[in-house]
Image (tube, rainbow, N blue to C red; front, side, top):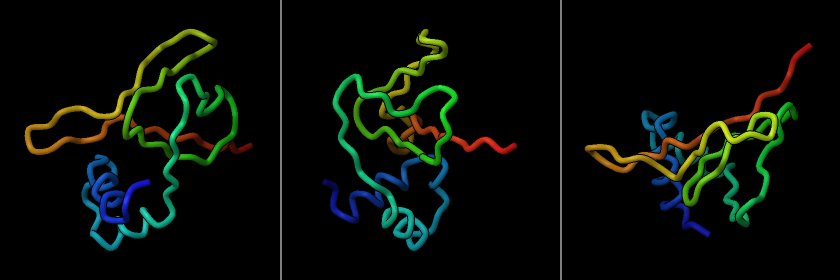
Amino acid sequence: MLRKNAKIDLIARVPLFERCSKRELAEIASVADELSLPAGRKLVSEGALGHEFVVIAEGAAEVKRRGKVVNRLGAGCSSSRRRRFGACFGTSRRFS
Protein backbone atom coordinates (compact mmCIF):
# COMPACT_ATOMS: atom_id res chain seq x y z
CA MET A 1 0.00 0.00 0.00
CA LEU A 2 1.25 3.46 -0.88
CA ARG A 3 2.03 6.06 1.74
CA LYS A 4 -0.22 9.13 1.64
CA ASN A 5 2.38 11.34 -0.09
CA ALA A 6 3.22 8.64 -2.65
CA LYS A 7 -0.47 8.29 -3.51
CA ILE A 8 -0.78 12.06 -3.96
CA ASP A 9 2.33 12.10 -6.19
CA LEU A 10 0.89 9.28 -8.31
CA ILE A 11 -2.47 11.05 -8.73
CA ALA A 12 -0.69 14.31 -9.63
CA ARG A 13 0.89 12.56 -12.65
CA VAL A 14 -2.52 11.72 -14.13
CA PRO A 15 -3.15 14.33 -16.85
CA LEU A 16 -6.74 14.89 -15.66
CA PHE A 17 -5.48 15.94 -12.21
CA GLU A 18 -2.16 17.63 -13.05
CA ARG A 19 -3.51 21.15 -12.48
CA CYS A 20 -5.07 20.36 -9.11
CA SER A 21 -3.74 22.03 -6.00
CA LYS A 22 -2.02 19.95 -3.32
CA ARG A 23 -5.15 20.29 -1.20
CA GLU A 24 -7.36 19.01 -4.03
CA LEU A 25 -4.96 16.13 -4.69
CA ALA A 26 -5.05 15.23 -0.99
CA GLU A 27 -8.86 15.16 -1.11
CA ILE A 28 -8.82 12.89 -4.16
CA ALA A 29 -6.24 10.62 -2.52
CA SER A 30 -8.37 10.36 0.63
CA VAL A 31 -11.27 8.80 -1.31
CA ALA A 32 -9.18 6.78 -3.78
CA ASP A 33 -8.93 3.04 -3.22
CA GLU A 34 -5.73 1.23 -4.10
CA LEU A 35 -6.28 -2.22 -5.56
CA SER A 36 -3.92 -4.97 -6.58
CA LEU A 37 -5.63 -7.32 -9.00
CA PRO A 38 -4.53 -10.66 -10.43
CA ALA A 39 -3.81 -10.99 -14.16
CA GLY A 40 -6.95 -11.66 -16.15
CA ARG A 41 -9.31 -10.01 -13.65
CA LYS A 42 -12.21 -8.20 -15.34
CA LEU A 43 -12.45 -4.57 -14.24
CA VAL A 44 -15.68 -3.63 -15.99
CA SER A 45 -18.13 -5.34 -18.31
CA GLU A 46 -19.30 -3.91 -21.60
CA GLY A 47 -22.74 -2.35 -21.20
CA ALA A 48 -22.71 -2.52 -17.39
CA LEU A 49 -23.59 0.50 -15.28
CA GLY A 50 -20.76 1.84 -13.20
CA HIS A 51 -19.31 4.71 -11.22
CA GLU A 52 -15.58 4.00 -11.25
CA PHE A 53 -12.58 5.94 -12.44
CA VAL A 54 -9.55 3.72 -12.85
CA VAL A 55 -5.88 4.68 -13.09
CA ILE A 56 -3.51 1.88 -14.04
CA ALA A 57 -0.32 2.46 -12.04
CA GLU A 58 1.36 -0.87 -12.86
CA GLY A 59 0.67 -3.51 -15.46
CA ALA A 60 -1.79 -3.33 -18.32
CA ALA A 61 -5.39 -4.01 -19.27
CA GLU A 62 -7.09 -5.15 -22.47
CA VAL A 63 -10.17 -3.37 -23.75
CA LYS A 64 -12.61 -5.74 -25.42
CA ARG A 65 -15.68 -5.02 -27.48
CA ARG A 66 -17.96 -7.97 -28.18
CA GLY A 67 -15.17 -10.26 -26.96
CA LYS A 68 -12.54 -8.90 -29.37
CA VAL A 69 -9.50 -6.94 -28.10
CA VAL A 70 -9.74 -3.38 -29.47
CA ASN A 71 -7.12 -1.65 -27.31
CA ARG A 72 -4.51 -2.21 -24.61
CA LEU A 73 -3.99 0.26 -21.77
CA GLY A 74 -0.70 0.39 -19.90
CA ALA A 75 0.66 1.98 -16.77
CA GLY A 76 2.02 5.12 -18.39
CA CYS A 77 3.78 6.90 -21.14
CA SER A 78 6.92 8.98 -21.21
CA SER A 79 7.00 12.74 -21.13
CA SER A 80 9.93 15.10 -21.60
CA ARG A 81 9.36 16.56 -18.11
CA ARG A 82 8.19 13.64 -16.00
CA ARG A 83 6.47 10.33 -16.24
CA ARG A 84 2.74 10.69 -16.79
CA PHE A 85 0.02 8.14 -16.47
CA GLY A 86 -2.09 8.01 -19.60
CA ALA A 87 -4.03 4.84 -18.90
CA CYS A 88 -7.09 5.99 -17.04
CA PHE A 89 -10.71 5.39 -17.85
CA GLY A 90 -14.11 5.71 -16.29
CA THR A 91 -17.39 3.92 -16.42
CA SER A 92 -20.57 5.89 -16.81
CA ARG A 93 -24.13 5.57 -15.71
CA ARG A 94 -26.88 5.39 -18.26
CA PHE A 95 -29.70 7.86 -17.97
CA SER A 96 -33.16 7.20 -19.35
